[in-house]
Length: 343
Image (cartoon, rainbow, N blue to C red; front, side):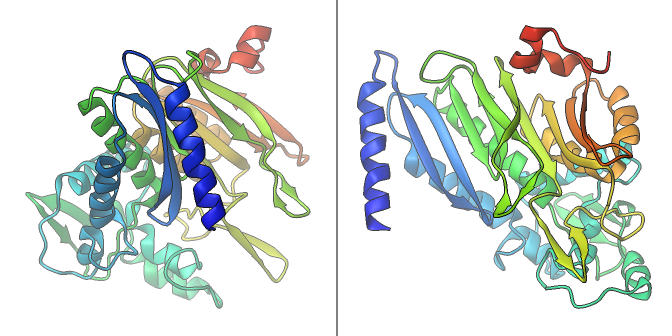
């Protein structure tokens, strides 16, 4: 571990010195937060490690449900707590997307997530009776924000913002970087990305969309597509091929349908969203997984602020892709070949 840390430090120093210019140099940061990893690249006049770490720790104290001292944990425990600005922004955006999606996106799904073994507990066995019982206190309409207080219709209501918070964390760090005068950066947290400007080579930032395939040793890292943004924006991908388990020969994935209480089980293998901010992209990526291909495409028609790239399985189990017309602008490989499967 010490050798690995030294290697990373040496690489950082080399990068810092070779990327120097009159206007700054490129730095890299990496670590863990919110039970996931992060990687940040940015061009600045000085390294911003301490400020980034401080911001991430503050974020952790706001929206990490696994941190017993966090605001969201206190809300879930029905403690008398005033929510902070970050919690408020996430809650309001979640409510907006819940309304637009007809409840397909719902941060009150936490009890169902826990029931199926993707939260605080491991699944033993789930019965229809258990699901019906829990659904009685699941529903975004049953919780509201009044001033700085969360009001629940039922004290058993629990919130889980993991389907939107990682994307928002990217936006939070992006704001910090811009406040420090940074114009070129890429912030990746748990696979969600906010980017602006250009990389060290002077090119627009690029991120890959993994092929949703399960290899003999786990998930493969083969790339299905490249997404390139030449302006500020967020990119988020949701897929049930990474976070799942198999019990009695049946696959259970982490995306839960709030309406049924069961894992979504739709034909979408992964959904990638491009939006002006990563919080929006993150939430809609999860929403698409719940809706399935046709309903997701229909929803997207009413939301011009997002573009999508969907990998799905057809009726014969073959992998297919579909994407919005506006998405072609962000797909350099397909744009070069002038390919559009679904005009």
